[in-house]
Amino acid sequence: MRRFAGVLAAVLAMVLGTVVQFSGTASAAPTPAARELRGMWIASVANIDWPSRPGLPVAQQQAEYLGLLDRAKATGINAVFVQIRPTADSFYPSKLEPWSQYLTGTQGQDPGYDPLAFLVQQARRRDLEFHGWFNPYRISQQPDPAKLAPNHPARLHPDWVVSYGGQLYYNPGVPAARTFVERVILDTATRYDLDGVHFDDYFYPYPVAGQAFPDEQAYQTWGAARFPDRADWRRDNVNQLVRELSRQLHAAKPWLAFGVSPFGVWRDKRTDPTGSDTTAGVHDYDELYADTRTWIRNRWVDYVAPQLYWPIGFTVADYAKLLPWWANEVRGTGVSLYIGQSASRIGIANPPAWLNPEEMPSHLALNRATPGVSGDIFFNANALLGNKLGFTDRLRTDLYREPALVPVRATRPGHAPPAPLALCVHDRVLSWIGWPTTTSYGIYRDGRLLTTVRATGPVMGYTDTSATAGEHHAYSVTALDRGHHESRPRTLEDQ
Image (tube, rainbow, N blue to C red):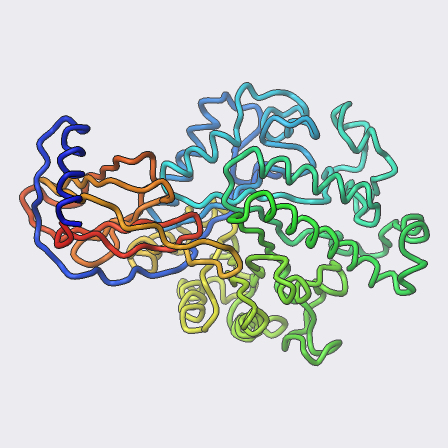
């Protein structure tokens, strides 16, 4: 092996066109890196995060996105969840749905480039996981179908559509509408190199006081004969969407992660003894018809990220009580648990706990002390990066100071690639040869993870700009596959 590695090193030197020497201090295997998903939601609906407003020139749209990614990477984020289908319109060219109004200001108008291709490409360059965030049922935040693009499927199939609470939705109880939604998402996932497909908490819409969701005709046509209880029928409609989409996505791309970020309370103990010790006004199961427990137990989802947007000790929904409840829900299933955190609430006065700069750091400390919790996703990008109460600085200099690898998801297949070959180090420049099965590499310095880089070809290089010229360090490189399984390290001792 030493001889083979030496030959490869010579080949590497010739390819690079420079003299490459082995240098640095030899070391034992590095300390295993922390495993923690550190995610950030980038919301496009109503231009919450990106783009900042519709109609921006392409260069400005792209510059804004690059700024978000660079700031996120510097903060310690390792995954982004980008809203690419906010209201049954798209951030990518599609034969099924019109262009999003949040790009140009006019639904259906071509922005002049492929935003999703750009979004994914730039996340890859920073070795950030990219999850495409889809809203399955929402069509419009206004109630008039005539204001949609002329070719919008909701105008072509008015029988799929309901108006509720001043907005338009695809009716989850219409089989053709459900099939169409699945087709849209599968089409996007197969055409783009996504790491995951992501839903938020919007299934059946949140209840509007004094209004009943208008699905009587659909219920009588497709549900009443099998489901005497309409609520059971509604839950089954959503279950079918999740189950069928999970099967289709995983058949197309076995490594792809499918996950949901539901409202933080499934049910509470007032209605179900197995529910959480809460007194919430809304529940996944009873009002949103999202039976997350069934999805988890059947492993239809690879991860769940409940939105625990309440402080520790909050009477109605105590973060410290909900966290172990959700950890118990995933125990033994293999489904990963991330916690949805609301960075947008930091610094608000209601409840007063959010005025305490230690509130959100305390959430992360509790997570790390709770078995089964694999990380966090923060809503939303501008709030997270806005340094409210100094939280961004706290992540960068303390909580996320040491980089972390994305945890392996037990529900998805994969195995560690072979270790890199022919690691060479000269004056802070690392070079090595990788294998085709490698997706990214972990760079270790003096036994600790320094960063990760995306695989771009068989011959790889990295310059440690954070090291001082002339210093001697011990470097190691590991290889990771699509599912973040890590090889043994290649150290200088292996040469």
